[in-house]
Image 1 (spheres, rainbow, N blue to C red):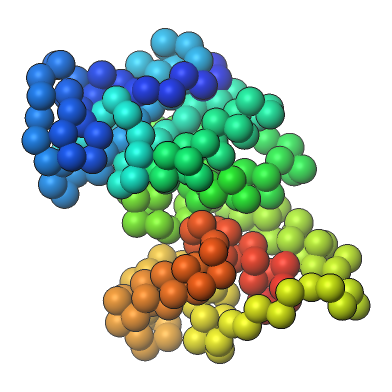
Image 2 (cartoon, rainbow, N blue to C red):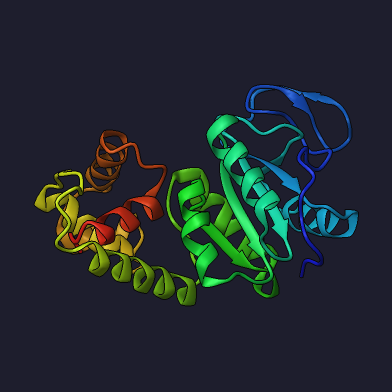
Length: 237
């Protein structure tokens, strides 16, 4: 389990940025291949080293020092504040990385802020086993959402409340979702993964991925969690 907040950006002396870089031993390495490049940030060394030690045992993870396009940035936070949100926005929007947030506590008012930052994978600190961290990192690398069940329920309630408050307004943008997109997002909101959605809708997994990619690109959404939030807010699901 992890301890204490997170902040520092860099990461474990893990290996490269997406193309090349230094691995944990400090040696230069080549292309990452199929391994997922991951940076780890935390304000205190114990939290950072705890996360690094859990991830380095898994061959599908390549620890690196710099985040950027193609990498997953794992941030360990005890609680959220404006500085933490600013770090999340910078990592996702400016550096182009995908983010996994490991957090000890989160107020309901902060949940939508985190999703709007572009974070699609959140892990409670008390649940941050090695397997749980790897699961979240792999989901983030695919662009999938991975939220604890209690957070997903709170997100749906929050967005439903926002939608009810917006009903009747005439200044809402008229974005359109196809019935196929709505069907896929409804199942995403219920926690199903790509394979399960494909089975339920009799689509191929490639089709499901193309549907999600198409709507997130068209509507400038950051990931699946952001797409679900949008669909709920606009009343599609």
